[in-house]
Image (cartoon, rainbow, N blue to C red; front, side):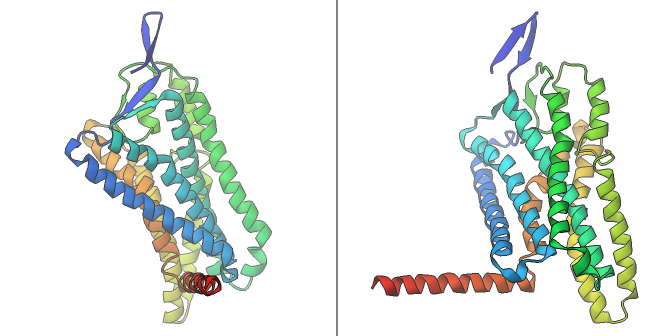
Length: 328
């Protein structure tokens, strides 16, 4: 472990991510499990992005936002899983302070973008269900672009302010982080700087707190959209119409509940010894499980996506057949 000694105080230049090191007999099994999960995450989400871009029938606001969400999930998984896989394989769990802060900044920003994007998708769903006749005029391509761009920009701004402050901190021993990635709470606990002002800044700007200024409006917008959607669905006269509308709404509700529920559990409940292992398990939910299941919940079971996938496979098979015939 590399440390710097200054004025009789040892400052850390590296951390040790303990991760799942307390299960040495399962390291290879965990490596294979998370490797398969990572491959599935990348395949599913990249497939959604490719289909949304290539198929003209998927050039709609809903699939535009789903493409952004899939791109986001790919980035989230790639921020955490490659480093975790390497630690399983090499048993080297050290990470420099600079890389640790960069991981926290990037992942925290992506989670903030996801909160904003899910809120935008709830608004799109509200317009589609509650104002179907005006939907095409209201949710045009220009508005879609600015809503998506606003989600990405505001999400990264929300966390970068906090992480710039963290980068100025001095960290002193012990240098062990009982987590599988550089998360906010465990990292700040290792600081020997004054964190009182940091707590205020985090309260105001951090994307990881459910009550922050920058995430409260998206949450309120999502709740308002849900109330309007449920009220509209109850007024639909036909059972078939209600079932169709609720089927679309339920997919978004599951994803939002899963995402925000785990974030609330991890970041708002006290970090006690009893709950620490549960925090780690629930962190797996929003870092690994949501990128894994979101494409299945949202897209891969939709008729439009299935048809686009069938067409894409058919075109690839025809291209390969024609190439073989040409070579012969």
